[in-house]
Image (tube, rainbow, N blue to C red):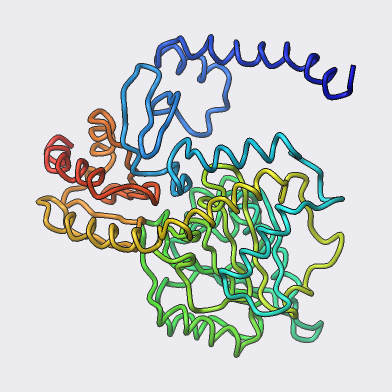
Length: 421
């Protein structure tokens, strides 16, 4: 018996057991599964809104057979929708070939994705990529890198500048950059010397950045804050101000990157020192990335300074490549821009909507009345998944492949949802 044949025979039984366990649970109702969830999973997310059992394109179905139009995309993650055939095929093929190797080794898919990210980000010669598993890990790596821009003993750079209402993640380093106090306070003390300044205020940025600052962290669009836009002028000014002061500029494109706004990066054409990515990069498969621009900046981290067990594994990198190539081959960036403009025009004409903003397939609309959480619940009951970022703001971040017809079904229902909220 060959090694492969023996391996197949040994694993068949385990595979059947694992499949049987899932299928047994899949026969239960949503209420029964929610009760099992409450008994077995740590309650950091609260009660799940639904138990989802399958997806296809821009739709998902719950355990009771109800269908939903996914207008949130797993929080800006499911770039190509659910169960995309190409993405599924690529992941399956890579896992069947080589799944994990650790970073003692590399793989063709890891190298290919790194080269592709450098290409689409217009990175200059000498730029490099570090792969992680999530956005917060990518930002954690970026924060560590910027610590190396420490100045001198006589003139140390000890301060980091972030923006009010910023969200950069929940691991301790990334959390230290996140603005919302209720996220940070329970876990103090965090890394110190972070100063938050008003977002979009060029004068405030110019006044805050001096030779004591090691880095400035900016989200080009503040997604968790309710899709708050920063102007191209502000991003360019940030580039000029940080360069003049010797501080590193970090663009957090975890939510806005990978075509979400109608271009691969919301900050383009401004080139930062560091850019972080995740969410849409893997189309639903976990992966994060930090792009470090220019040879001088890549020298801040050397062997042993940082690491990851799973980051850059062949399967995640193959998924990232499939997402990028699909975006390019299907001209999705054009469709995202066109559909985004159309969506926001339609939203602006709906009674009860007081403000609309966004770029591409990242849109927020504010309600005249502070009842966004109630609208989210009403929308879910009506078969639409949306998200409230605060009491008045609804965020939409659907798969990039969503059609105007699908968006139109939500727009048609929205007046009644607002009335019911």
